[in-house]
Image 1 (cartoon, rainbow, N blue to C red):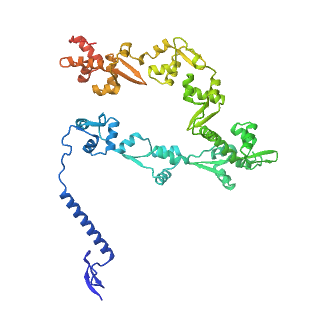
Image 2: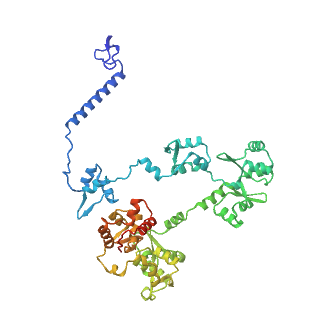
Image 3: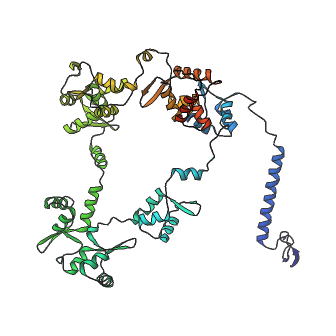
Length: 528
């Protein structure tokens, strides 16, 4: 049965064989089906949009918010909001069992925001890049080879104007194999062959091609095997080019015959007698020497520790490195060096070394209870504890300043007066040390309190002689002194300028300001 019909989707006439057929082809059937689904989805979306209620302030204008409410206000996740609190971007007060954030502090973030930068600009600032020319010069390859390798390893490109840049770290990783480790003592270049054997360029190419000389190509430079060429030219006795003689190894690596024999016998390197020479396999010997040169001592230490007996409980009569250092008043580093030198037996338990207490007592050979501390002398540990620095820093500073010291049974004692003079800047005055109510601010706190830069803060504390102290490399300043200076400045701010304000307002340097004030006899007030 043939029926003339018109396609429901495309509108073309066609011959149908059933009454129910409404499409001219399966393609039109699929397209119409997808269109119906798309229209249905659009209708459902429009219906949902109509039913949505207008947004209202669910926080109700609250002045203080929880982290969850703050995250909701900014449209962030709770984890991201907590991360901003942790790095100091958003200030928070942590009460017992609850964390509170002020809404004004969140809104104040948008008062003077830094200039927006895209992620690509930030990445470009932090990461280092190569240009085409730099890659070509470093890896000795053509521009075509660069593009092939970039596409192969999906190295991203960064465009800046007409220039193209490639990530330095990724290029170093994926282009490293282009720089072959060539020992030039084993190879000739074409100019060297031309000069040594008085051959033309064409003669060299013909010679190496005819004799199938092994070669290595690096960029545009080709290197040919020295052993093969010297053998063919008669400058080397007819010994297989794949083997070294003892004389060649001694010349190349500056080894003695005993050293060569050690490597050959201990590493079982292929060797045999050829005439009056003992020859050694070239590839195997080079590989062993390279591995020896590149072996990390850490790997050996891991192997050695793996052979030691493993325990989970500390045996009776064994103490750790930290306990030894505390007992005998030395550093852990000194304990490790001393026990390693004496080859003291030990157990490794959970990556910590434990030594026999009797063996350690015999090694250090002194009774800590009967040990007498010299008068007016102090150890490095006591200096570090008093002046809030590390023991390593104490050793460095005292060595630079040549502080008088005495050594008694492996322990250094430093003269107390010289140490106090050296580290005097680290401590506050005795009155401030006794004052328990004195409040100290770090440099960052001072900058936030005064709203100034780091350079301005240093100038401020120096100019006004703000009392300070130093702990673990961080400077702290007395809060009350800073507030007194601020009150003094506020007292005269309406009627007087400071020198810094004059410099900033009239774009003048300090020397010019002082000269003008002196000659114009401008009235001034000096406050200590």
